[in-house]
Image (cartoon, rainbow over all chains, first blue to last red; front, side, top):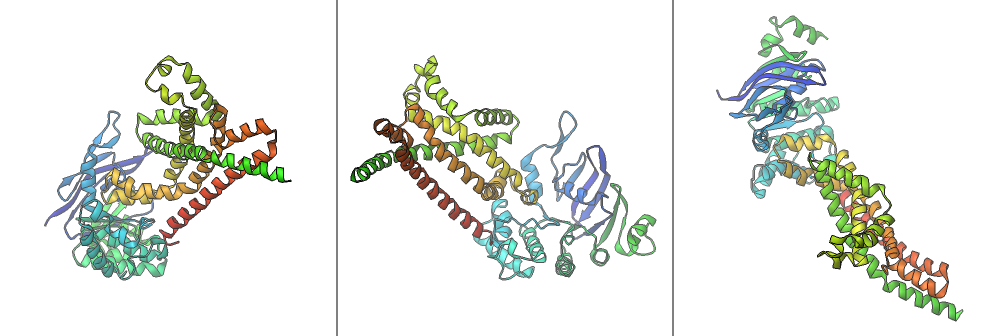
Amino acid sequence: MTEVLRARGITKSFGGRAVLRGIDLDAQAGDVVSILGGSGSGKSTFLRCLNLLELPDAGRIEIAGTTAPLDHDRKGRPRIADPRALNALRAKTAMVFQNFNLWSHMSVLDNVIAAPVHVHGQPRGEAIERAHGLLDKVGMTGFAQHWPRQLSGGQQQRVAIARALATDPDLMLFDEPTSALDPERVREVLDLMRALAAEGRTMLIVTHEMAFARDVSSRVVHVRDGVIESMGPPDAMFGAGASPAFRAFLAH
Amino acid sequence: MNEEIAFLTVTALAIVRALPVTVVLALTSALGASAVAVALVAAQATRVGRPLAQVWIFVFRGTPLLLQLFMVYYGLAAVGPIRHGLLWPLFRDPLFCAFAAMTCCCSAYIAEVLRAAWQAIPPGQVEAAQACGMSRWTRVRRVIAPQMLRLALPAYGNELVMLIKSTSLASTITVLDVTGVAQTLIAHSYRTLEVFCLAAAVYLGLTAGLTALLRRIERNLERGTGR
């Protein structure tokens, strides 16, 4: 098994309030890890620490063999030691956001080819060809020349997933990918993610979709008050072996 | 009546002949001010540049353009190193002095317009660019600048309209632009209202043309988002 993610001792506070209080998490290639927890538990912050959209106060992150270039200034505040190393690390990951965050001034096609062309230096023609394949895959055939604002939320999120797949990332980070969708649109995105899991993508998913977490994950992680309260395979987590705290969270 | 028409025709021709001066001053100042404004915004993203840019904006936005014109044209001539320096041929020329003062003053306003546009970019747009590993320069080029342009355009257009009208102040430092020529004509004819009306019509034509152009650009940019 290839290790894709190794996070150790991640801590983060905002204005003196500790949001993450030491999180360790590993993921092997092909793992689908669902991160569950109440609002304010720190699960999204943890995910955003992994690609350094938030700078953790302490801890060590390794993604596909590359160590996050974290450092501290003289006052002990976290900082990026090397921007190029940071970009190289981020280029190995892809993130799918709650609010899609498709670039509003680019067509669907340009959204999908932006990272391959401008980050990975892939020839444009090649990237376009691949982008059309990915749009087929996410069920957005024929939408290449549309603009993000012309699409429904579910369609935007599927394009965002195609954009994330375009660089063939080692690790995909999903930050509540269905939370901003109408109930009837949630399904189309979850089905797509299910297909990605089945083809062996390594995925970390912060979600509130319990059924999805139970059916699709290889591991379920329960975050509470900035620490991992319990984790395990879905059978154990959703079965008799569940921790009381997780059971309480589910019942809530 | 015939005499009246003859006077207006002669006056209009004289004013239109001064149009190139006004246009050149407006165009060069607009380009200069925009370039300086971009530099000011970029400087504000660095630790050393931020206070310098802020002082620049504070000073040039906070003092009257008229005084700035006087200081550059009349004031700098009294400064030895300039009077006897290599740049004297430039600072001796009132048109250049007007260009310099207007560039400084308008750059402060345009920088604020650009900064507001920068801050109006939804954070998620930039995060998406960061998350896929774009370098800082690529983020600016592919995401931040195009979105800024779109957001800044209406207010930027407003600044350009103000700039065109402000060029008339250059007449106070002997530049014979549209306003300068109009004043000369009034000195000869004492027909203040007619001459100034003709001059005002020229400015109106210029700003109307600019406004139409800007509206067109705005429409094109909007088409580029599928609106």
